[in-house]
Length: 244
Image (cartoon, rainbow, N blue to C red; front, side, top):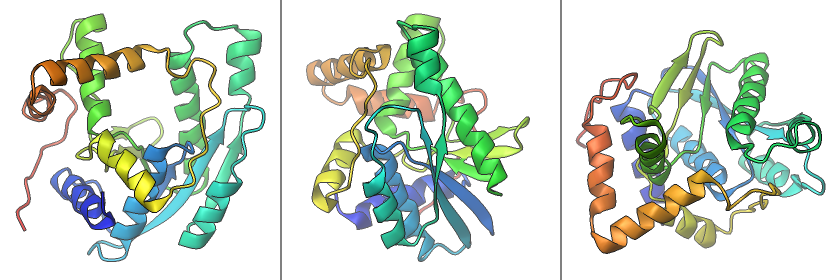
């Protein structure tokens, strides 16, 4: 995927769900993976021409893995002239050494987001951008249907009252395969996950299920995505389609 196409998808999401306002200070959550680095490129590129001026700050919550070297991310942010902050935590130690969690994903996500949100507020940001893409949205819907019995997926934009912070998801129209292509084309400095349960989660199950469904029923993936967009889900903001 070319950068121009990524910027087109990003602007579509930002415009249709009113994600960015004048003088926003947006924190970009950086895990080190392909998705968050693609998001960083997307918002950096958008910033150059978007009519509403905004600032960017990149933030990583270091979970405490051994040999988790963030030097490539530090160098990238320096090249893009984006301030970069690393937040140290003991999340890995708490989950695996103290609690010895066998299914740590939900608690890990909660702790990681809590640490990230608290850090970005201290940095003076009023918004935080998560790198969830189209496949993440569909997979979340499948997980909710199968394990919770409800039709749900996370919103493109969510205001967190307690934190006085708005979460945005500018990659919501980008396919994961396109993210993979972007990573390869632009040689993104991905820092591989050190998580011991990576690839063995319910999320991975949903990912494989979605791939199987779309193989057996071509177009099913897109139809599910449009069902979500048109589903009038609770908590979702009004969508204002833009035509340019």
